[in-house]
Image 1 (cartoon, rainbow, N blue to C red):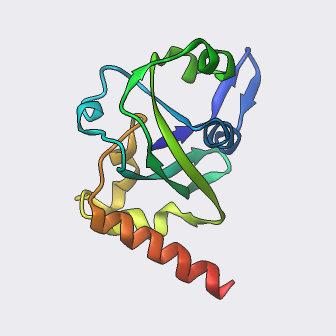
Image 2 (tube, rainbow, N blue to C red; image 1 turned 45 degrees about the horizontal axis):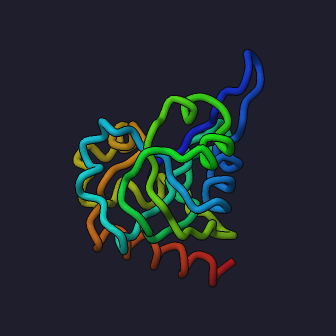
Image 3 (cartoon, rainbow, N blue to C red; image 1 turned 30 degrees about the vertical axis):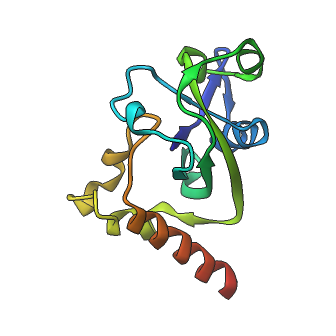
Length: 151
């Protein structure tokens, strides 16, 4: 699950971590109804939060999907702030946690199975949602746990 810095107004930036915190707090993830992976999403699936920001690129946490894709409700619409989120029309329910010690994306993503060009790993994370294998998910979670125990 990919989140980036958002724009609000002509000069205001909403940091990606703030956008992520808001989504986790309210238990939703925005998606496009045109996302090619939306039909593969099911309750009980696990996900990772990839944050791409001017502050850096990190894996910031994990979640479990709690509902299939559905149109945005008025309640969620009132919570959404900034571009590009205000363009999206569907969401999935999530139960997420943001890690106290995020993982530098460059330390783990190049080693994931879906990344063929290791030097250009960030090109594989365009858009808001990408499938990863259970093995890649476990690899990142284990890496984060080990890293957090050593700091």
